[in-house]
Image 1 (cartoon, rainbow, N blue to C red):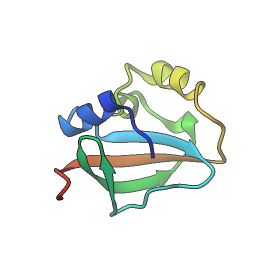
Image 2 (cartoon, rainbow, N blue to C red; image 1 turned 135 degrees about the vertical axis):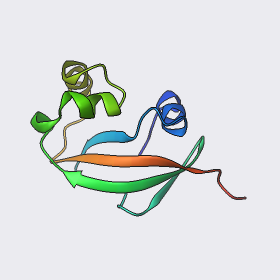
Image 3 (tube, one colour; image 1 turned 30 degrees about the vertical axis):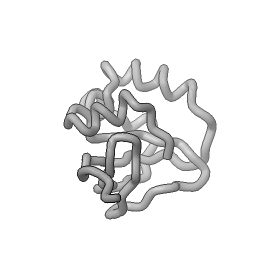
Image 4 (cartoon, one colour; image 1 turned 60 degrees about the vertical axis):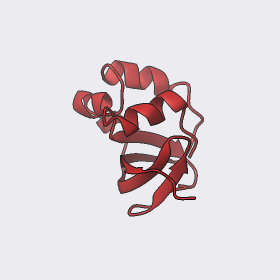
Amino acid sequence: MLLKRDLLEDIKAGKIDLIFRRWNRPTVKAGGTLKSKVGLLAIKSITDMSPDDVTDAEAQRAGFKDVADFRRWLDTMKEGSLFQRIEVAYAGDIEA
């Protein structure tokens, strides 16, 4: 799962704890971790859902101003048969 540096920094700072992804095959699992440019991310939970069910509160947790802002972003994403809500947290530095 590729995440932009600004998004990673906001996750590390605790400003964002939710990510939405549309894909054909998930690349992360609940309970797993993901190495990133800012450190290790914990994948806390993954929920299959419809983009139509995203609330303003969830959109804001993901760094969007509101649902309309989320939908504009979604329109720029690749098509996929699966849409997921992924709860994340910064889990610390990557051990060498």
